[in-house]
Length: 458
Image (tube, rainbow, N blue to C red; front, side, top):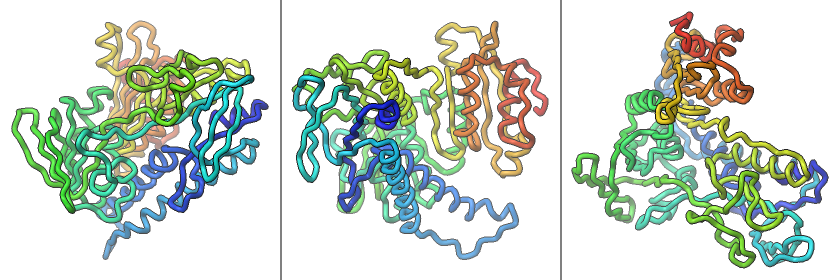
């Protein structure tokens, strides 16, 4: 995004990226396109169709006989979608006249007029840029003593490539990746056990929403264990043994066919030669930047997972565009208070702004309004009435401070809340806007009405 926007603004722009397919051809798009957002959503969708065919279609009068899973075709479809996105970026680079270098880029030295960058690919070459934007992303964090082999102990990369459904799947970490990947393989038939070190479930999510989500996931069949302390992990020939103690201190030994480790991500700065040019990293290894994404080096910028803030693809994109505009002398802008978060489980979880526990901790007087999807006509027609919409508004001004959703299509519904908060809307503003009937978005309107205790349909 930074390269495309810079090119649109008239800069001679080069983008360096080392991602490759199995055949060694360029695979533009980084983690998001290749082993993150895009392939995970493809598998989530496929697995959801499979579960509906096996369990939900009968309610609609659709009888499915001889239901079978073709995991090879499912993975092939996922790979096709990834390639379509890769090819789309190639097209956008050509359209915007961005020069692409396939290889690993690193600083060589500061030179007159900018910085010399070495690109190591099939050949080695050097280019000079006046402004450098670092968008090197992040890597999955390994658990000490349980390094990734992508065969038995899996990161997000291996979790997206399993050639068969494991009978017993362990997931260490109940965050976004752990829950999404655990959901995929549970729907396809795996017995999934989630082990989470924290004593609370989804601590960053509004507590009421997190409790509702936890209840729904357990009902679906996910075994979620909180307050777990992981002990020794032993890799066998065809399985992985995990020793752990639960929140009461009882020791357990679990044997899994596969183990997904999703305990966070670390900034990808290896091989940049940061020391060689004096690029400052913070104590956690992130590239140190100011509020405008400037590093300590003149004309060197950094965006995305490799800097502070949420590790979200859309946050990275917004920063990339903003930096390109700042280089051009414009006033690029990113509002961290209105960045939406989404967990693409079923039901989906999405939120923007502050949670109820954050408002309490900050001493902010607020009003809350909720509306359940079980009272929404479109949700009933869809056959998915789980979850709710929750609004939090300032007790005095009625300005929307946070919106939290667990339920069908939460990832799409949250956009209205983001727009409303960006324009400093009040709950009353949303309550007064006409929403189409029947639609899931009516739950948003009703939750806004509930802030003033005047919901019409519940």
